[in-house]
Image 1 (tube, rainbow, N blue to C red):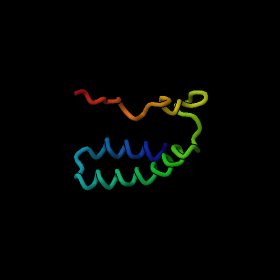
Image 2: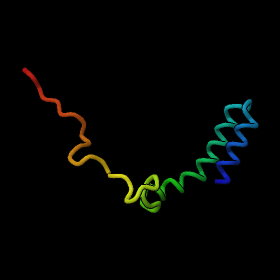
Image 3: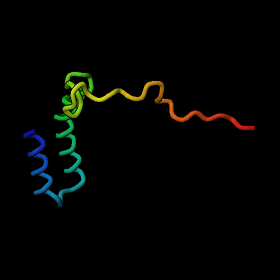
Image 4: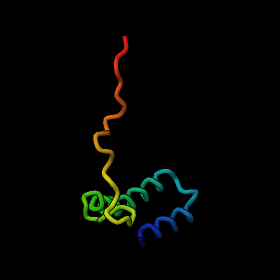
Length: 72
């Protein structure tokens, strides 16, 4: 949380920074956030959004998109 607050403060005070400075700051934040996000996605973070039991994994039998039949 502190890293996010620091990054937001940096963005507010460096709005005229060069592209390279923004990219450097982005990499700094990503280096902190990426391990956290990986642990959440690997199941270490519990349910999503504070909902009991988490969110369902998708529609059963779906996921392949619409079925397209050939018409003569």
